[in-house]
Length: 276
Length: 228
Image (tube, rainbow over all chains, first blue to last red; front, top):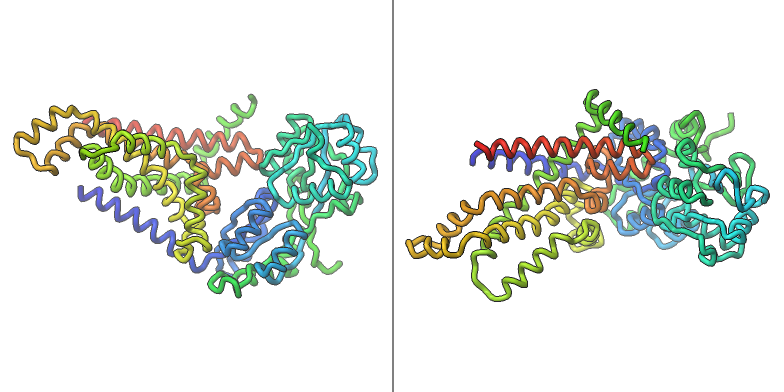
């Protein structure tokens, strides 16, 4: 019996010591694309060491990340949906928004391109090709930054994607959606980073390039970092949030973003690096 | 099918190299589930005994409600607790969201109905005649409960074991409440979900294999303890 109580005390102690770290931590709500690409594992450790802050990354979609900021459950958000970000700041939920890196979206499809979408020079025309051929299109359907961009593109093309009987919404992350599109032989919109990471595992080819390789500028994908408003939530880790914003916009942070590569390819491009 | 083979190799690599992160995640999973189960058992076993031995109306209905609670989707438990623990929620000032305590609370809430229900069922199965005998022999209520518990101890132990199994295998509540934060709230199951979302099916499966092996080892150990 004594042993049981010892065990209990030990376990309780563990639980308490775990929750005692609350003060030094910085909760970063971000998107799966930054976390899954491995960028944060490269960008954050030097920051943590230098500032003595434990960054705790909660990786969800952009919509969910902003929601965590709105409720004060995150201290800082790193997301990629400019329209939603502006609403977030205008609503008084976030302050000090900085765009600090970008990559681009690419339109993907089966290598044999049954809808002939690759012939279009602009992404709206490519989407129209897919729509009119009633080809399978796999959407994230999860209010993520990529999903928001996709819906914006359909709107610009003047099309209602749901009128296509072969429009499929997965409601899942980018990786799962790429695999679904590959398995269904469908088209999909992806950030370039996730596609590069998955390229050898899916039977998908780029149908429309983004601006990184000289394609349609509509496919630009800027990332921002925003501190949660300390006026609204006085006891969030605002100083930590501002330190992180300083880090990712500093020349050191920007160089780390530039130098990060997967499969020999850069995934993100710094916005604030002086030309060399 | 090829990734099933890859998974075996990956599992072997992780185990043979005693990969630090995997060891870390595994021990964290075990800690969380053990603590949640222990706390749940402290509440549920007495509760199950009282509910089973008491005589009152609507006992059948209560059993039905308990049985239903054992099947509540883990994501729902996660969402309800999220609502409570979020800053906007009634317990927001405790700042527990995205901490280990939140994950343990989620697992606790999942284990409580299971342990209560199975304890209840195990004690219900004790022959009423036997209890009547105890009482006519002059046993107090407490002595009667203790005697019934001794008789039903295997069932109660099984109840706790199933509670632990539910706690360690669930992923929905742990993801929502813990946020799958590396080094803090990442457990084996949330790590598997993460690897799956990254398309690392083999690695996910390997982690699953490791979890199941450790769980099997635990069960065998318990069996041997009971055998003595």
